[in-house]
Image (cartoon, rainbow, N blue to C red; front, side):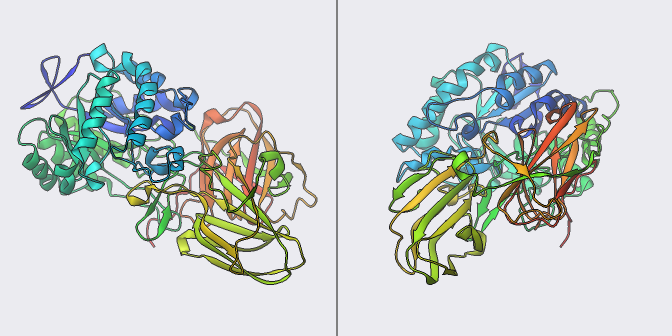
Amino acid sequence: MPRLEIAEDGFRLDDDPFRIISGGLHYFRVHPGHWADRLRKARLLGLNTVETYVPWNLHAPRPGVFRLDGGLDLPRFLELAAAEGLHVLLRPGPYICAEWEGGGLPSWLLTEEGIELRSSDPRFLAAVDGYLAALLPPLKPYLGDAGGPVLAVQLENEYGAHGDDAGYLADLAGLLRAHGVGVPLFTCDQPADLARGGLDGVLRTVNLGSRVAAGLDALRTVQPTGPLMCSEFWIGWFDRWGGIHTTRDAADAAADLDRLLAAGASVNIYMFHGGTNFGLTNGANDKGTYRPTVTSYDYDALLDEAGDPTPKYAAFREVIARHAPVPGEPLPAAAPKAAYGPVPLTHTAGLLDQADALATPVTAADRPLTLEELGRPFGFVLYDTDLPTPGPALLHAERVHDRAQVFVDGRPVGVLERENHEHALAFTVPRPGARLTVLVENQGRVNYGPGLYDRKGLLGRTTVNGQPPAAWRSRALPLDSLDPLVLHPAADPARPPVGPAFHSGTFPVDEPADTFLHLDGWTKGLAWINGFPLGRYWSRGPQTALYVPGPVLLPGTNTITVLELHAAATAEVHLRATPSLGPTEE
């Protein structure tokens, strides 16, 4: 493919004028069995480019480990894009925001006390250097200067909202060049942050969702010549637990796209297809109150979470056709959906009973250890200690990150939630030597702002009746494999046990197709099908069903496993043909 050039009057591709018309499509939020389908629908829309972030924390879950396999096979994604005739904008971070766990920064960075993230701190830059040294060599054939589809690479991400250290950006640019990136670099920032977040000699672009003229004027103020580009044109938004499902009117969003294109600007539509925060990968925000993001990243995008065209797809295609060629093929149809009906969950096992099978505790620590200290990025931390004196007791935790369920001798006595700023819980110790157990859920690391330093577990001073216990046993429960679990037939299938407990059942499939797991009557937890992590559910909504990609299912017998953290009013779940993202108005 030709190489992109940045000229005073705009982009050029092989010396011809070129306008980037792109859409956001994150390979790591889409089952790899659906990559080709989503890329085809991008081309049919009239896009000539797709944009993707690269999540450092997924590719490098531990120091010295780097993955490019399965759903992280970025070279294959780039090959499929090129086969569809699409260019690619690559955004490797190191920080990506993206409503993604920790903004893509790996949690093992937080084991370095005092480390300054997103800075020229030598420890941070050394880690970034290692990341780029692992990521970029396999991608070199896919860069535009080697004839590949990658037109340009982003430098950091909205850095102006975080700081103004041009030296740090220069260090990053140097690392990218040193590791073989020869294509143009660019930065992106919201209008007020353009001056702070840019680097001389690197193309600045603007992010906005409305007020198009003002945003482009702000870009022209700091960059009088060169291409006009909106790197994130926000056409929807993300949802948080306990909120509503956020939507944006299709005609309103299309009108702003028309304004961008009429101004001669290039654009990246954020999102063309949002996808799903599978597993435990959702991020969170904390602007005084911690707010975790839901599992669905539908984003009210042009393709919905299941990859079907929405009204915005048709509206945007009509706008794009006024400014650029659009394929003459018909609009893609919705993919078939299946309703596999109710699935009884007939087998069960208590999580606390399974703890030894899931993880070995680190014993006799003088304080609770964090998830990072235990060497795991995702999941839960399970703590226990012995209480020597019976009678009234008060547990006080300086910081709960993020949601702690408390048990005495295996019986639930209460919950402490970071979101509600809760720190103390009263209970009764029934006997000498009673066991206090605390199960802490990492509900997602903060992905924006100073809260990036988001260690998980019980942080700071944790006491019982004002004194720290003599010893804590701490263990990480990553739940990245369910193989160690031993489930038994439920004693009374009509009365599921109180959680936290695993529940499992099977169902037959003739023809695998997309479906949606509805958890009516369930409270809070996680779900898997055939070991594939669908994500979190929570009865507080707005989302009340989890998307199940068709490629996860197998012809024949399939297995559903649910970890219910509290209690369910039923022993069955339902696989239906329709989603449930929640109400759009409170």
